[in-house]
Amino acid sequence: MVRATKLLPEVKSHYGDLQNYVGGAWRTPHATEWIEDTNPATGRVIARVPLSTKEDVDVAVQEALRAWDVWRETPPLNRARYFFTLRDLMERHFEDLSRVVVQDMGKTIDEARGEVRRAIENVEVAAGIPSLMMGYNLEDGAGAGIDEEVLYQPLGVFAGISPFNFPVMVQFWFWPYAVATGNCWIAKPSEQDPTAMQLVMDLVQRAGFPAGVVNLVHGAKDTVGAILEHPGIAGVSFVGSSAVATQIYAKAAASGKRVQAGGGAKNVLVVMGDAKLDKIVSNMVSSCYGCAGERCLAGSVVVGVGDVHEKLRHAFSSAAAALKVGYGLDETVQMGPVISEAHRDRVVDFIDRGEQEGAKVALDGRTVQVPGYDGYFVGPTILDDVRPDMSVARQEIFGPVANLLAVDALEEAIDVMNASPYGNAATIYTSSGKHARDFRRGVRAGNIGINVGVAAPMAYFPFGGMKDSFFGDLHPQSRDAIRFFTESKVVITRWP
Ligand code: NAD
Image 1 (spheres, rainbow, N blue to C red):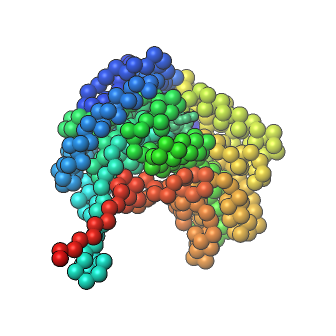
Image 2: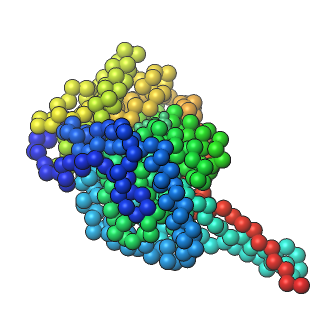
Image 3: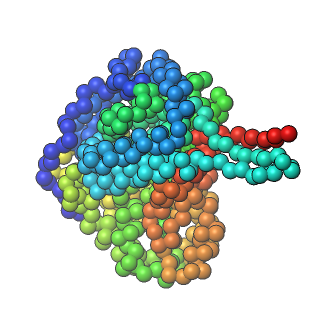
């Protein structure tokens, strides 16, 4: 394992006490509790995050409701124009946004650029709202001389609660569509890395969005509780772990809100004997170790089918061991730290547990050191001879740990996947169309990769999992998002 040694400058070393962005202005929240936000590579505190109270949430909702009165009357084309301006500002600050993501979340600069690019793409797609939001009609649809049409209308104020692993992109799976369709938005980013959304709100303000249309409220569990209970919020978009997603889905529905809630994942990469190993190994390594395994689309279990296992273990281990671990602002680094000390301990604990349950540690990242940095690093790790019943094969680790498992046939691999409570993503590596088709048809997962390790759809496609990886029906992004953020109205017209 190669290690980075060079210390790098940061965008800004300290953001101080964060404020909420509410009603078009930065406001000090009523919070009495604050938590520290650290740079995962250095362990240094970069901001203090307020745990906003019920009162703070209420102020944001009242501002958003006031703004909605005017925003809903703003023609779609005019609403779209704010997004054109925002897009230009995001392009201009592309590098700043990417660097803030690195220093707060820990991923590499290239991964952060990929994330910010995906966020911009959602702005670009949402700017097409005049076409996306059109209804439809049928002359004589309800009888001779009686016409029928469908209109889509906004519902009010929506809130978005996002996880730490994509501190910019996940909010953009939702809010451009919510706001372009004529709703107002309250963003509640992860308390573990909220500084990138501060920068986003600066750009929102500079893009000229009317006060109260887009708001930012910092906080954690209790702030989310206040959002879920608030009668002025029409719906909630959530992404995070399955345990929390389950609660969000139930609580939001209980208070009569629309809800879409993405949960955790345990994604499987299946390698058939007919796969071209030399062409797929780097793709698999990037799936398992990209963003230090902290991606909901990360490969976590690698299943070799038939006699491919021995060759696969060798090729995969050599490529994983060569990854350069370090601070993501160094352009040559290929894998950064995990988000926090507590999360590093959790990942290491999983590796220990895998070993105790009988897996062989074929590559051990537990003791990795990055000279000059005191952050939360875990090196790429491989557990071999894993069985499907082991905890490391069943539970989400969300770290740079790949579990290697061998089965005799594709059907067995599909059974392993379908027995999992998760269903976010699954990949097959093969050169057989028949295997690919059987896999695509048989696996219960929302994102299928065929020779693609991270099956991440573009902004103009919906994104979401199945089973405990998604609660709700309409997914983030694209046409699903338009439907989620609007309600349909049927009008029947007769002129006697
Ligand atoms: P998390 O569930 O701990 O937190 C997510 C959000 O919920 C945060 O904003 C947090 O403040 C809030 N929250 C935490 N506990 C809460 C509680 N008890 N009640 C109400 N709100 C609460 O998730 P995380 O650790 O930030 O993110 C990692 C998880 O997100 C992983 O499980 C990963 O698979 C998942 N994820 C899923 C997708 C997807 O598309 N399905 C995408 C990215 C991440």
